[in-house]
Amino acid sequence: MSYRTITLCGFMGAGKTTVGRILAKRLHLPFKDTDEIIEESEGMSIPEIFQKKGENHFRNIELTVILSTPKDGERVMAVGGGGFNEKTIPFLKSIGPTIFLDLSFEEVKRRTSTGKKRPLMENSNLFGLFIKRKSLYLRAHHTVWTESLTVDEVVETILRLV
Image (cartoon, rainbow, N blue to C red):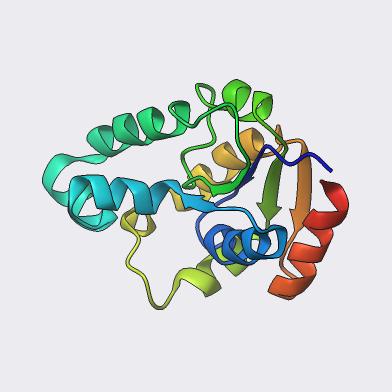
């Protein structure tokens, strides 16, 4: 089995970070989360970046982080909800399998209603953003419907795909 970079994509609340950590542990690979890399490099949280520097600044850093991922080596990587886009999809698909963690909009709202503050939850057209991004996520190599599965079942499904 050759893993290279296994990239997890999906809308906020899909479980990219949670699934990614467990998948990486199971495969004995390092785990990278682009949002965490950005927070560390900027010295502030994603909501603070959005508030103080704006979404465009965040997206530029996100693009740089993703496109600077080494082509060699093995890892599991979770990209932020907006990180799987026209500029990054060809690159991400070239360095390994891409997995879309899919769920319904209702489940997104349920999962994101508590806990971690997410700047885009304030978007007045959140459903439109969900639909727009889903059309991009569907370009991933594989899709896993996460809503009716436990985290371990999602990991097992991904292991069968890669």
